[in-house]
Amino acid sequence: MRILVIEDEKSLAGLMDQTLRQHGYAAHVVHNLADARSALAQPFDAVISDRRLPDGDGLDLVKELRAAGNGVPILMLTALGLPKDRVTGLEAGADDYLGKPFSLFELIARLKALLRRTAGAKGLQLEAGNVVLDTLHDTVKIGGKAALFGKREVVLLRHLLQRAGEVVGKDVLEQALYGNSHKEEGADSRNALEVAVHRLRKLLEGSGATLEIVTVRGVGYMADEIKPAK
Image (spheres, rainbow, N blue to C red):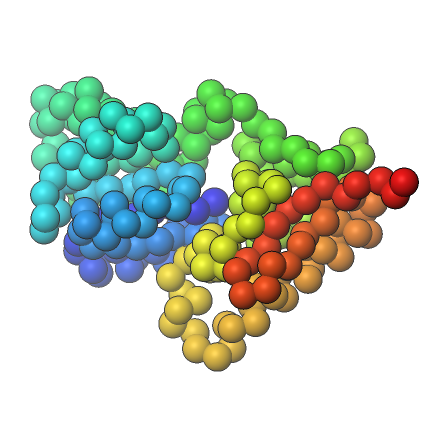
């Protein structure tokens, strides 16, 4: 799952990034509202945002997202821990509030609970062809039978199924799989996405999926239902 982290304390942001990745999430970290607004041109599964940021209050972004009809789950972080501050945040559209300082273990627990609640509200399944992905439990069925997929294959499949029939850019998929780390690993990471796509294709083909991953050269990949031969 792809998580946007908005935190201007770089040491804390780094710890959050590391902890999220250790728990199987792909974190995209920004340090101000301007970069957050740019990042939100792409879909995220959840947002974790501080309130006091260099260019404004994180609640302003929450209000903007809700006014635009964006229901992405939002967990607010703040040193403003009074009950009235929490009420203000929740009334603005935040889904949960965590006061600073906080335990990283509690952060992960709150995030998991938030994702469970919103997954139940949005519906649990993504489908294309005979492939069904349960977005709450990250499990895959092909032709009604359970299929064993690794974490990265599930993340990749989720993002392709969310836009089935449309091209998903390489940058979006790399960010979903590896967070910010793929930009820091140099040449060794250049073929990482291609390797992940190859593994996903083999899993789909080996399980009899009526879904294929199409390469759009220089742009990205698309999940498309295999049409029966005439």
